[in-house]
Every structure is written in C-alpha cells, then in structure tokens.
Length: 293
Ligand code: NAD
Image (tube, rainbow, N blue to C red):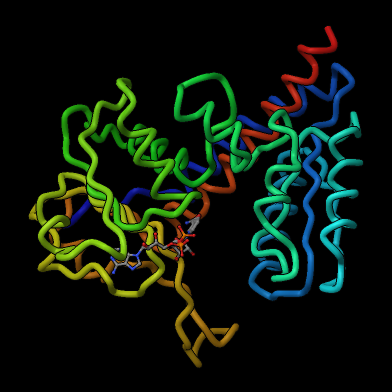
C-alpha cells in the first residue's frame, strides 16, 4: 500500500489566500490586521521561526510589529512591553516566541497577554475556553492537524486516535479537541510514562506523533492502513544540505508504505501551523472591528 500524501503546503496556501482576501476586506473598513511578534535573544531556530511568520503575515497583506529584544531583557521589561501591546488598538494579536531566556518565567509572560490577543491560545483562559468549547482561538498546530484530516475526508468519528506527546502546545490540546462531539474520536495519549508505546500505536486508526525524536515511529509500530500524522520537527546533520542540516519528523519515512494517509516532513503539519496562526490573527482583527461597530 502506498499512502495518500497529505499536502500541508498546498492546503496552507489555499487557507492563506482566504486570509489574504479577508485582510483586504478588513483594510477597506479601516483596520490593518497586525500581529506583534516578540523575540527575546538570538536563538537561530527561534529567529528563523519568527522570520517565516513575519514573511507569511506580509504575504497575506497583514502587518507584523517586529520586536527584537536582547537576551539580557528582564522579565519586568518584557511584561511592560506586553502591557503596552495589550493596550495598543493597532495590535490585534501578540506572540512571544518560545523559549524565552531562562531568567524569564514563561508562564508569567503567557498569562500577561490578554486572551483577546492570544492568537497562540496559550493563556490559561484561552485553554479553558477551548476545553469547555467556549468561543475563542484554537491552538495553531492542533487546529492545523484537524484541518488536514478534514481536507482529506479522513473519518474520525468513532475511530481510535493515538497521540504520542503530551505537551501543552500539541498533544494535550489535540486530545481535547478530538474528543469533542464534532470529532467523536476515542483518544489515547502516550508520553514518557507510557510503558509500551508500540502496544498503543499498533491499535491506532489514526496515529499522531508529537515527540521530537527522529525515527521514533517504525513500521512495526503501525497498523496496516493507519492514518499517520507526523508533527515532529527534528534537525539532522546533512553536509549535502545548504544549511548543513535537514529537517525530518518523528516517523520513519518507510512507514508511508503501510499507511493509508501520511504527512511528509517538511511540508505536512508545519505549514498548517503558520496558516492557522494567520487565521487567528485575521479573526482577532475582525473581532476588533465587530467590537467597534
Ligand atoms: P515537548 O518537547 O514539549 O514534549 C514532547 C512530548 O513527548 C512530552 O510530552 C513527552 O512526554 C513525550 N515523549 C517523549 N519521549 C516519548 C516517548 N518515547 N514516547 C512517547 N512520548 C514521549 O514537545 P512539543 O513542543 O509538543 O514538540 C514535539 C515535536 O513537535 C518537536 O519535534 C517540535 O519541534 C514539533 N512541533 C512541530 C510543530 C509544527 O508546526 N509541525 C509545532 C510544534 C511542535
């Protein structure tokens, strides 16, 4: 069996076109949707993430307020910048690139962004709203996975989804969304305390890996015909690549031969995350217009 490749790049470009049209409509009403992108320090991976987000915002006709702060920025200074952004009517979303330097308490920073501008859906109130199915933004990577499942008409209702990884940004919210009645999946969430990962993954109709370990998921851990979604982003040294490394996922690429649907890395979930971020920013801008009128 050779799997249908779930093309996140293609789907994300369609979504981004839709966002661009919404941004143009909002501009005509006098609002330029704007995301403040805050980066503290000079971590190269973080810098490349924020640059790609800023580029995507520009391409969608939205503004990014790029705020680059030195590694020595204090928690107090960062909190004060966030307070200013919270009060700035021209800023609709605020993103602080993770990780922040160790001397800054990331939880405090997350909690300082008002939920109306929390387009990452990391604030405790945003997370609570998501779990309770109240209105609010949905977290970008989990929502990107759901969009891919929808686009490829993958049935989820009543199926067994096994997720590896219980982080606050991927595994935990994804499990929560998939148990909503609208998806109706039965979810198993695996993590470092799971005794026999393969025992669980072999039962998955839909297997999602969000761990961050190259080749964690091998063919003998996957049921024939399963849907396999790879959220992992791992850098592996490759002297033939321009940057000296290439990006791969958590799933051994040969799993594709056993799966019915398969997300590539790169080009699967990654581009969907950015598309969902743009969607949240435009929604924040539209919410701002509704509040004013
Ligand atoms: P994290 O590092 O916060 O958490 C990793 C999780 O994996 C933990 O919950 C841990 O319990 C679990 N884990 C570790 N070893 C395991 C094992 N052997 N079996 C089962 N579970 C195990 O992770 P994160 O921030 O959610 O990121 C996970 C991966 O997803 C990383 O590679 C990250 O780069 C990637 N990621 C990709 C996107 C995207 O847009 N594609 C977005 C976010 C994260």
